[in-house]
Image (cartoon, helix red, strand yellow):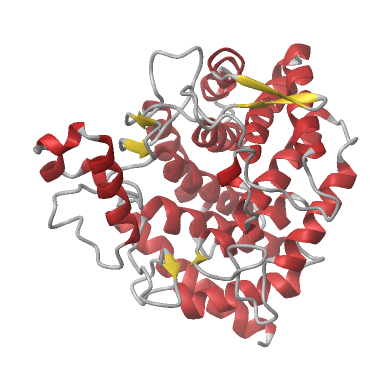
Length: 403
């Protein structure tokens, strides 16, 4: 597509998404929020792990949205709020380059302050430092029940990055201090599993998902922010050990499996993006460039194995479906973070063009997943729209920076 037409199409798409999310006040449903059903919570089945698991999976897998009928409320999700905040920070940066297509600098700054305050208020209490979880109970197979707001390193890492980006704009020292205490959550509340020359941080404060590679790298990412602003050498040492373990687990072709449990041996698109983003952030924050070869090899694998020629994103390296909205969103963010946007701009344009054509509703929101059978076109706020909002804000920043 001719460049000006693509840019116009992108801007129309993004403004429709922005209007939808703002109208909803950034609240919405989530693929995993089934246990928030007031109907289910009134039943004795809520005490049975298999019933909880089946209920969640029924909501997640159904292409029909029963949430309104079964009284699942639309709510804020901390990771979703963080993604929106990251997106508005990018829009603000673009506005300083005379791009007012998404609002004036003053309007964007007001939104940044609003979302920052909301995110700080949503932090989980009773832990060693700032941390965040999700707004719903979640049954992890039959292993354990995650109660709502149980913190995870994944949600926390997104929130920390968003708050630090907010601090860079607002210079609010309170925001920075709150964000940096998350390093204490990582060092004191997460477990560690020895792996090669380093270790892996656990996914959460509960045992069960202790060897997920992207989660461990997000722990290292948090610690690298702490080192950047506090020069805490112990945090640098721990971050490097976690990055080392993850890089030793990278396969020769540049790929990573998801985790070390036998059931976690798949390779997927967006978690590959998370890994690359985290290692790059570690390098930027610490000025330790010793892992650059792993980044380069991983990025090559990423762009060569997870996208079709026409821009259609694949979920797995060896299987296309389900086509998940995380996949086109994360490649845009990762390319921007790794400073290779222009190098891969042709691919990114194809991916975004395909996604707008195939995964955006006329009301502005983006679908959850496309499948070979009946697809799920439910407008999930965190999983679908917050990720695409952040991605499109990064895309907007990049194309306006390269004028």
